[in-house]
Length: 280
Image 1: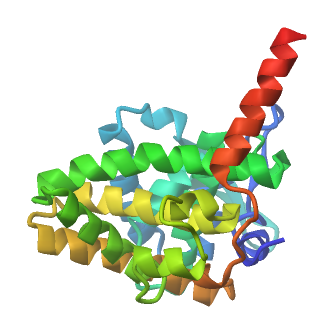
Image 2: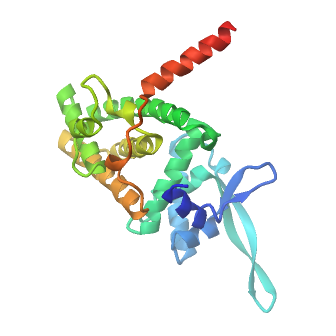
Image 3: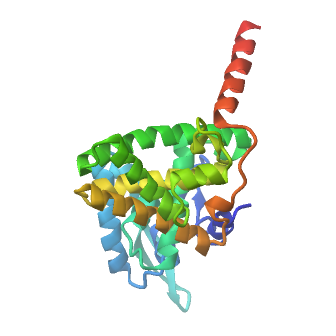
């Protein structure tokens, strides 16, 4: 079990509920307590921002934020009804994205819900996949988001391929404690033609996926302009992911082992296996 899973079991997973159909959900009042918001009205402000983000994503707010009444004890066996909300995992993700990121628990929550939401998007039974399948799934997801980063970086003023390489290096330097792509390449002892992302384990790939998706979101949300600001944003996001890994007691990405088999080789083997099954 990874450190992030240990933390989530202790906090976010411990307040998770399951309905009769096996679908997970959270109560807003429980999440309020975990995220260390003392006043409900302050937390409601965060929820309203999350609802707006949900609406801007063209999603039905009611599918993710459902108002309910909840009975609580007020002493001497008496009870009264209070407002609460039933939240989906995606709703929780939007809430922590709009919460006070100066709190350590918020930063951890952002990582937890982003990673878990991304896992669901990749494949519902992600945890049941073997390591090779996880690597392949995350690598393919990274390809999609790296293309989106190219488009967003261009809008920010990153034009030439050299400028984009510089932009990418800033993200790596933030995440890898100052190491650029060529440094990571050398550390992994790869050949010139080999891509570093094809020679990462699932944990290292997940850290890079989180870096890419959060940079993508920040560039868009903050309307970043200018290549210098884009580079700075990519570095800061990478550094924040690194800091979160450190706070969770995780292994720094540059210290994670390099798998013997590349993602390209895994993909080729799976295609060959699939072809053999079809022929048979």
